[in-house]
Length: 128
Image (cartoon, rainbow, N blue to C red):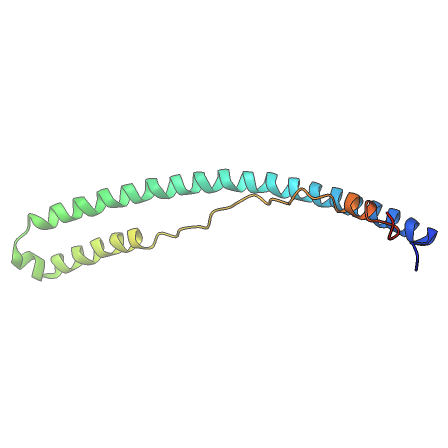
């Protein structure tokens, strides 16, 4: 082979067009996905704020239970009421200890490459 045939050159143009079409479809899909990701990031932030509010409330409840329990005698703590309050406090503390940490939601980034142009610029012969 001394150089690419006309058929090869036409195939290169066809492949470059195929690459450009696929790249455009990929770009559109990524833009759509990133819009959805942006919406998910906003929803995640609202979710995390709600969880923060719930945990602040639970911390207040635990402090109030502890304060009430601290005012009671040792005999009260050893009795049924003391045990019931300890279990009640424990349930609230368990809620505080079971906080999920969702993963960060990040946009999709595609490299800005131009494979079609690179293909079209390949030499068609050893001289070029």
